[in-house]
Length: 203
Picture 1 (cartoon, rainbow, N blue to C red):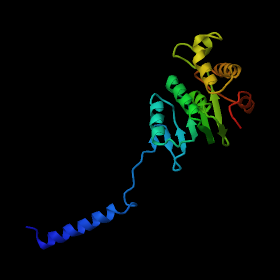
Picture 2: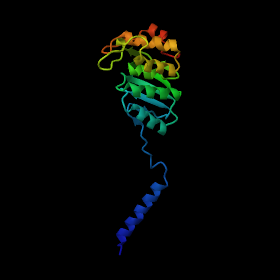
Picture 3: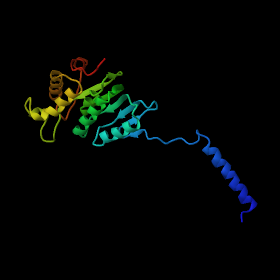
Picture 4: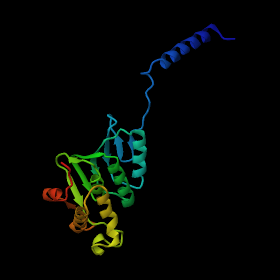
């Protein structure tokens, strides 16, 4: 048998529960906004990217896009390259096919595979103080320049550039420029003239 005191407590708890249940502002969904190197901003249309593209990046982006299909723009803070070139090219092509805009934030730095990713943007813009770095690739034993022009090992990159809108001539010109600009262990920061010549920006 309930005492008078316990009965009052039950009533009070019931009132609190009903009050919370009827107040839509009390319970706020805990939505995930960070997916690896990608972070969804408050407008739910913009993603901030910061970090190295890795083997999980495509999976992370697919999960992000499923949750936030309204994404229109990616803002790159920094991306020094990729640890998985195959995933990087797949991820980049996916971003291109979704017609996503890519913007380099002020003082952003992109290099190597990060540059390939940037080129996937249907529209490519930048803020002030940005740096774009390129170099040769290496498989651990050989560098890209160890293979002659036209070798099959060059095709994945050239075909990627063509798949995101570069002409055959422009794709080859940019690719061979990158592998000859610097060895895999170093970096070449593109000049303003080179950025214009190789059509890095769309406006």
